[in-house]
Image 1 (cartoon, one colour):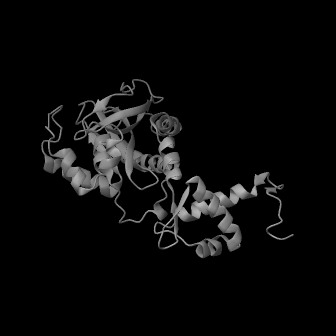
Image 2 (cartoon, rainbow, N blue to C red):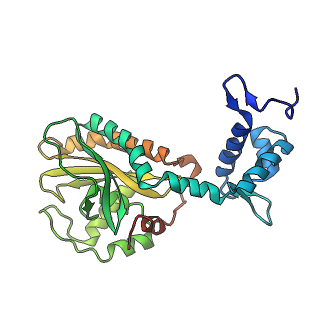
Image 3 (cartoon, rainbow, N blue to C red):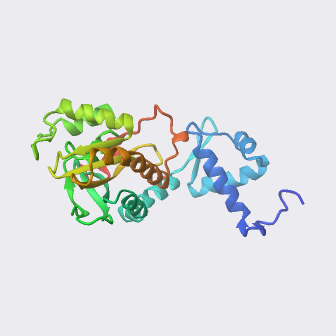
Length: 285
């Protein structure tokens, strides 16, 4: 049986062949940031050029692919970005993050939370109580300053140089505790460390009785879109505990990033998305 005459549905696993091919094409195009030609797609996917042509023509007509007018290379179309935006609205984010917050709470025994940017502060979008007694009571919807919280420092670590200056130049370093960072230089040092390590800490800086840690979460563009972490009372969450929880917190953040479409092997190390634009979508002034 020739390729053209094969049934549209693969009876072995009840998969629809044309859909398989369409998504294979989309995934392959997504791997090539500079676009990919019809012949290259054919070679990469092991399908005849006529088959690929019919699939790509359909995807272009639907808006999920676009072709450059001069180089004839296929790139992702507006339809994909519309779908991605719909998947990343707050309700979907909460639904996606909650199981991983539960997992992190079970592994650490502490309250967990996921935060995003909101009006140049960290908004706790969703939280989950840990199994231990006497949990930190921090409601979802709470705004927190970025300079003295782990979630805030994690979010700051995702900014490029220009956005970082914009979002930190007017910070008034109000001392919530004796451990609160005192100036921009102290903050920059901690944010740079968080950027290197992928995780940030708050050692009694916002609440004298609470320690926190948070790891960065990225989306399909490689942009830092949130921070996931845990908080616990100082008498239970020692510095040794925080060190032990670092690996698991980063691992959970990586899982959530993957849920949001992040593929580190497909986003170059030198790729620096415009973070300020993404923050504005969450209500920043």
